[in-house]
Image (cartoon, rainbow, N blue to C red; front, side, top):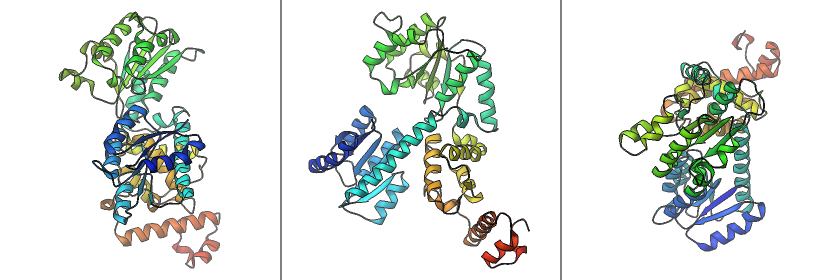
Length: 408
C-alpha cells in the first residue's frame, strides 16, 4: 500500500484531503508544519508528500529542500493559496513533482496523485527488473566495478559496498551473490534494510535474543545476507552485528552497504571499529552517475525500453544535458527524468525542452542561433525518418531542397 504525508497547518485541510485520499487505498499521515513533517517523514517514509507552502515555523519551500537532502527522489506535491509564478518555478526547480493552486479542483489533485503513484510503480518495477542498468556501459568506473565483482566473488569473505544513495548497490550485491553461486539453484539471497527497521526489529531479526543471530541468519544460511544502510545501526547494534558476522561467517556470506564514508566515521570515533575492520577488507566504492557520464545514453535507452518506449530517441542536445547534469538522485532521478521527458516529446525524440528545468540548467544553454540550428536539424531528421528516408517526399513536406536534408 502506498502512503501519503499531508502537511498543512489547518486540521480542516487534513480532514478534507483524507476524505478523498483514503478511499483510493492510500495510508495517510499528517503534520502541521515543516518541522513535524521532517520527523514524520523519517519515521514513516511515505511514498508521497502533499504540502502547503505557507506555514510556520518552516514553510513548504524549505521543507522540500530538506526532504530532498534526506531522499533526493522523494515525490512532493506543493499546494498554495498564495499562488505566484515565482513560488511555482522555485518549487519545481527544487525538485517538486507538481504545484497546485488553492482552491484546486479535486480531479486536479487526484490526477497529480495518480501520476505520482504511476511513477512510483514504474520505479519499483525498474529496480526489480535486474542488473541491466547498474552494470551497463564501458566507462572506467563501471569496468572497475565489474572487475571488483569478479574478484570478491571468488571468496566468501564479507564485502562492503560504499556509495551514494540510489546507485543500485542492491543490484551489485545480487550480482556478487549470483556470480559466487556459479549457476547453482536455490542458493538463498536475503536482504535486510536497516533504514526501514527500528532498533527492536533489527535486534530481533538480525542479532537474536542470544546474540548468536536472529531469523535472518537461519533464512540466509548457505547463501548471502545483504544488510543495507548499516550507518543506521546504533553503536551497540554495530558491536553486536560484528559479533554475529564473526560467529556466522562460515555459514553465511555477508554483504553490507552504506551511503556514508565509514572510514572517516571511524576516525571520528563515530562508528564501531570492530565492525568496520571486520567488513572492510573487501570494499567496493560504487560510483555515482556523474562519474559514469559516458554510460548515461545507454542507461537512458535501457530505461526507455523498460517503459515500453524503445522507439523513442534522445536528441543530441538532450543527451548532452543528461551527461552534464550532476544527478544527485542517481538512478532514481534519471528514471524519473526519462519517464517524464518521454511523455512530453511530440515526435518520438526527447529534446532538451522536454527535460525538467533542473536538468536544463540555463548556464549550459546554447546561443539562440545554435539552438535553432540544432532544433531544425532534429526536426528534419524526424520528418525524414517518418518518410522512411525518401528525400524527395521529406523535402516537399519541409519546403526545402533535398540537398539541405541530413544525409543527402
